[in-house]
Image 1: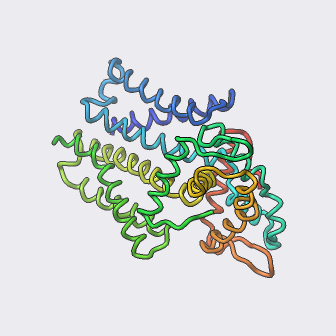
Image 2: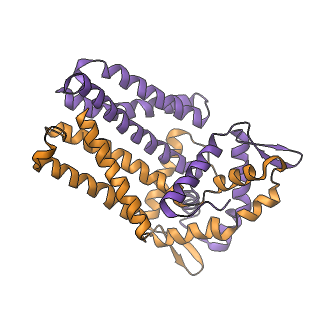
Length: 169
Length: 173
């Protein structure tokens, strides 16, 4: 149980660091900063556990326990970072259900919902982020896949075929 | 193999079972959400069965065993969510759809043509269809109303609270 306490404590410390940092100053590159915060905290905690007599008995002992703590912390950190994009961006589906809920028994018409979702927020903001992240490039009014974007597209096409997934929207 | 080694490898085994069962269930005709739930449950059940064996209990006696189980399941939850995110992006991510569209069109497309295919109207219709199919909203007298199911609304509210906690702002809804 002490090992679990150590692991949960490390994860909590990382999350607290993330919250404090976000309140002090929102970083420009959210994903990169989250990776640094969460995995930096893990590295610091494991180093401390290996070298501090005060943490003897709480920290991992043996390579496999180090790996178990790292697996636990790593998987939940990456899950949170993936989840964070849902927190950060205004999901169209979330905006729709919240708006409908807010309207109560009167409900919302399609026209009212269309006002919430405009091209700039929904589509152009995504294209701008793809340009920024190097997935596409703009050439004479056209969007062209970069090598990076091509790899991602092919990977997802493969997933679609293997899993027999229907296209969404 | 030591029990610590076996316990460390267990979340990966759970993920493998999750993926295999999810694919089988999806291909058998189940809905996407149901296949994910069944796969996740199968992986969790397999891990529970294995954790009962001494070989997978980890070191440290009774409370150590409970602690090991917490870490194993915690890691598995992370893997399960990561897997769901990866698959969900294929369906819900506009960026992924645009990249696949560009690939299908010889890797390049005029921005105006792209906006004809992917615009707010199409996205609104697709999202409404998906919410209606999942019974998260329903249509009555020409307007959309909440329910009968509320899982997505609860998720949206949770995201709103988390957004407020982390960034200090709420969803524009």
